[in-house]
Amino acid sequence: MKTVAIIGAGAAGLMAAEILSQSNIHVAVYDAMPSAGRKFLMAGKGGMNISHAEDFARFVTRYGTRQVELAPYLNAFTPTDLRAWLHDLGIETFVGTSGRIFPKEMKAAPLLRAWLHQLRSRGVQFSMRHRWLGWQANNPTKLIFNTPNGEQIVTADAVILALGGGSWARLGSTGNWVSILREQGVNVETLQPSNCGFNVAGRDYFKERFAGQPLKNLELKFGDFQQKGELMLTENGIEGGLIYAASSVIRDAIFKTGTATIYLDLFPDKTAAELLAKLNKPRGKLSTAQFWRRQLSLEGAKSGLVREVLPVDALNSSALVIQTLKALPLNLLSPRPIDEAISSAGGVSFDELNADLMCKKLTGIFCAGEMLDWEAPTGGYLLTACLATGRAAGLGALTWLEST
Ligand SMILES: Cc1cc2nc3c(=O)[nH]c(=O)nc-3n(C[C@H](O)[C@H](O)[C@H](O)COP(=O)(O)OP(=O)(O)OC[C@H]3O[C@@H](n4cnc5c(N)ncnc54)[C@H](O)[C@@H]3O)c2cc1C
Image (tube, rainbow, N blue to C red):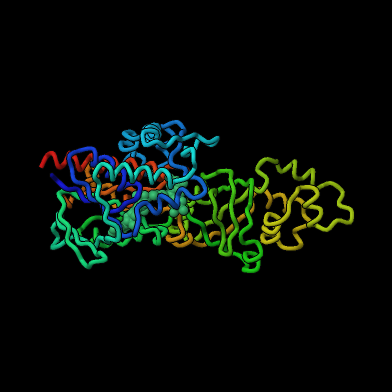
């Protein structure tokens, strides 16, 4: 019986195991961590958004510059297929109002438990605390692992690398595979933060005062990007779904020009004329803060931001205040470190892979998941592409083994 070694027990690696375990193949999964699927479990904290039910043509565009490369894998494992697969696993799903797909229980743990149980019952062998270090004497069938019992050499007929990206290293995805593959001549684009927060210019006093406060009902504008949502102020700058959605374009702009200015509309549902009508009302003896609160319900972090941006003598100018409320500029200095990001961009270049995700330079070695060079916003797009490419790598390994 032929053996396939899968390195990385995350969404992509487990999906490859799912495919291979249905054939007459010995499937051995290795992971550096003490247990499988740690990032998968983390993704499930506070609601596991595993995919998205929007129109499929729109869905594919979420993968931006890599939609062409990923489309065949997503076509072969659509969000509908993903839901059917989960159903077969005994996990029911539902579509939220925003189109996001969640397991009914919202959590990742029951899903992972059922999945691992199924894989074990099909004979998949799991070896945890096995850190892959590379190949012995550049032989693609001989894998070196650092294990609790010292260094071990494992032989496999084919290998699937599903080693994850470079964020949240404490969950296992350290990105230290980058140098191993580069040494073999494989082009790996540098891992960068994706779906990340940003450091923002401004006074420490302001940041400390408002750290942890949400900014709700905003519209963020940056170049062609324009979207409503929420942000969170932090001691360094900003985090949250809205900035994550814009993070790839902002990151690339900072990379090119050194800085990026985003504009926040603090009242996206009101026109400037409506705001002016409110600010033109008689103020009486109210302070600026009291007047803003009464007329606009403007207080807390939003009010603080306006004061941070405008000089004191401009606060009495309705025109300047309204201009700021509708387009408050924030100067973003740099993305937060990759380890804090939800996901990473960069990875194994698609030029290095054939259609079955096998490395052209390393026969019998397949790659899948976040370690490939693509990125996508949050919303279930990340996990869907990890599962779809894991499936493709599993099928690719099967086809390749049959042909050798
Ligand atoms: C906080 C958070 C929330 C998220 N929420 C969502 C969400 O709601 N929806 C969504 O779609 N996505 C979400 N994501 C992203 C999603 O979880 C990841 O994109 C996905 O899990 C990546 O899967 P993967 O299999 O490619 O890699 P990983 O899950 O990172 O798995 C890689 C595995 O490889 C192992 N490994 C790495 N190097 C070695 C080595 N040298 N030797 C042996 N083993 C090694 C690691 O230990 C790890 O187990 C979230 C991520 C985070 C951090």
